[in-house]
Amino acid sequence: MEFMKEALKEAYEGIEKKHGGPFGAVVVKDGKIIGRGHNRVLEKHDPTCHGEMEAIRDACNTVGSHDLTGCAIYTTAEPCPMCLGAIMWANISKAYYGCNVRDTDSIGFRDDKFYDYLKGNSDILTLEEKDRDECFKLFEKYASDEESLRY
Image (cartoon, rainbow, N blue to C red):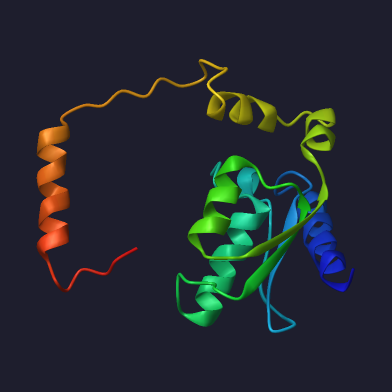
């Protein structure tokens, strides 16, 4: 509960300052908080500034790496698909959340639309492959460069 209390503090700060929704998060490694964040979508005019994303960015800056292996994240709500992707890309192996997707929906957020899309049940976005051959040349260049960082 200690770390969730810190995530809640982040969320309360965000809503008091009108930065965005009631979403706060902390990233923890070896029993210590290394990253904090709350929703800043309204403050920064950036739809990617969810609490989890902000906490992950802060943690990465703290450790000087994009790799948060061995970390856990505590967040006030079940991560949306974008945040879930960031959690997985950061190699965070455990996520604890307070409210679930139904709770988030009950206060007007639309995470369910994104989950529906991922299940193939929505036309919210159209994806279409285009100019693959030219783009694949870029991939080949990257793969042939021995000094490229892999991630």
